[in-house]
Length: 149
Ligand SMILES: [Fe+2]
Ligand SMILES: [Fe+2]
Image 1 (cartoon, protein in one colour):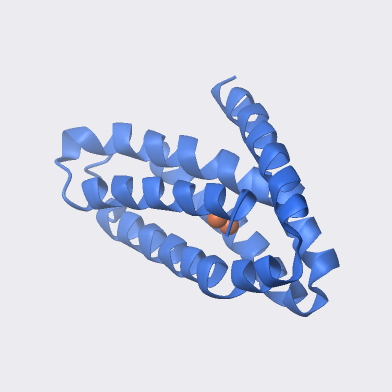
Image 2 (cartoon, helix red, strand yellow):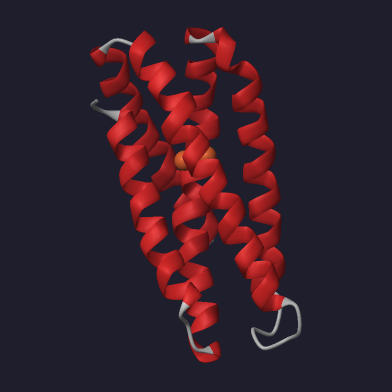
C-alpha cells in the first residue's frame, strides 16, 4: 500500500471527520462545513477522474463498470453540494438532503476502498502508484485553485 492509494484514503478520512461534524452541527455551522466538504471532495473527485480512474480502467479492465459508476456518483454528489450551498441551511428538506449526500459518499468511498483500489493496487507496480500519487496531488491542487476562482 503506497503512493496514490494512501493519498486517496487520507482524503477519505478527512472527509469523514467533516461529515461527523456536519451530523452534529448547529444550523449556523452548516454552511461553513458544507464548504469544507466541497473543498475536500470536488478536487479529490476531479483528480481521481483525471489521473486515477483512467489508469485503473487500463490496468484492471474488469473494474471498468465500477469506475464508470463511481464517475456518475461524483457528478451526482457535486450537483447536490451545489444545491445545498445555494440553499438556506434551515430550509425544509436540507437536513434530509445532507444526510442523503453523506450516505451516498460513504457508499462511494466504501466501494473505492473495498473493491476498486484493492484490485488496482494488486495489479499496479509500486512505481506506478508512486507516480500517480504525484499526479493526483498536482491535479487536486489545480482543481482546488479553480474551485476557489
Ligand atoms: Fe475517493
Ligand atoms: Fe471517488
